[in-house]
Amino acid sequence: MSVQVQGVVARGKGLPVSLETIVVPDPGPGEARVRVQACGVCHTDLHYREGAINDAFPFLLGHEAAGVVESVGPDVTDLAVGDYVVLNWRAVCGTCRACLRGRPQYCFSTFNATQKMTLLDGTELSPALGIGAFAEMTLVAAGQCTKVDPAAPPEVAGLLGCGVMAGLGAALNTGNVSRGDTVAVIGCGGVGDAAIAGARLAGARTIVAVDIDDRKLEKAKHFGATHTVNSRNVDAVEAIREATGGFGADVVIEAIGRPETYEQAFFARDLAGTVVLVGVPSPDMRIDLPLIEFFGRGGALKSSWYGDCLPSRDFPMLVDLYLQGRLPLQDFVSETIGIGDVEAAFEKMHHGDVLRSVVKFDA
Ligand SMILES: NC(=O)c1ccc[n+]([C@@H]2O[C@H](COP(=O)([O-])OP(=O)(O)OC[C@H]3O[C@@H](n4cnc5c(N)ncnc54)[C@H](O)[C@@H]3O)[C@@H](O)[C@H]2O)c1
Ligand SMILES: [Zn+2]
Ligand SMILES: [Zn+2]
Image (cartoon, rainbow, N blue to C red; front, side):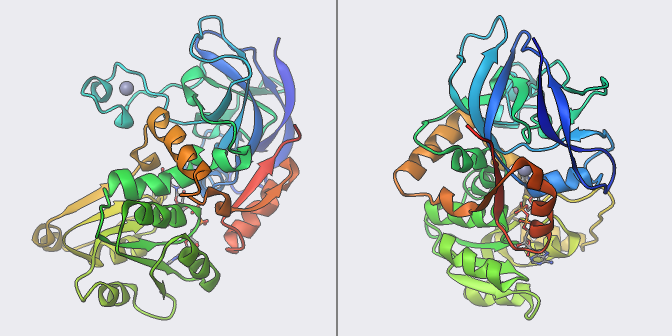
């Protein structure tokens, strides 16, 4: 039996989101239906609403979530009703060329639910990142459910489902930050601060936080920044060089997704350094840089999708670190809100008032 629940829908480019009744089908083969307990508001949701990802409106937003498995499809064996899970957007296939080479974190053929959730009139919804979790119930591929220790509350554990994992992984996996490295992070929202926390966890000796908002820089210190730079007032590249003995950082992480900040990242790294782009650019953005600089500096220019994470490996491990008090995931939660407050949360995000607003559903 399909169920009808309330969900947050973006109907068209730039239109405010609306709360709509959505129809969530019974799980078919390979699928699971999850009762969502909490779902964070990520900047990528706003990108969807603005039409910056694609035009497949209407979107069912929300993709940073934890909850409990409500029902599973006929052939699902590794997941049971009642399991506590974080939803992921990297359910690996096991058979694509990346998976076959032992690199499932790059899987090119990840799974989502086959059936579509719809509006009451039958209009098919595009769930954000194949999840759609600003809803009391959502339908996903069983592989999108990663079991974690239920001792971690859902508003905290759910953060690993997207932005915080993306930031942690940009430092730990993609940037491969190691003990003694110097690191700079440009853009200190939820993603950037997670990159800072990841760099600290990996043992970086210098962590330079760059933002244009002093409130964000204060927070960044809390997560491990050793230096802060307000790039509204000073030149970010110069300031990063200054904080790193005049050389630039070993790893620079761009967590905004804009050409001008990418350019700062590019010039703020040391010779043989690494740039990691984790911010998501819009399709119209271009960069123009001298090719000789790419060549002459050596190193690596990388982008990081979802922090190159493998959910089954990384989510339980990071939840354990949180439970041991070694990763302050709870400090990313600026506020918990109701399902009707997502539009207001976008507004707060836009004004830099929050790291993460998290929608909490009644138990
Ligand atoms: N690659 C991935 O897998 C992945 C996953 C999740 C989110 N993202 C992307 O990461 C980016 C950040 O997400 P978020 O949720 O942290 O967003 P956010 O809006 O909370 O944070 C952005 C931060 O950048 C700062 N900023 C804006 N313009 C700046 C500038 N010119 N110079 C310096 N700082 C500036 C803002 O003050 C803010 O603190 C977004 O583009 C989002 O789509 C990527
Ligand atoms: Zn694969
Ligand atoms: Zn996200």
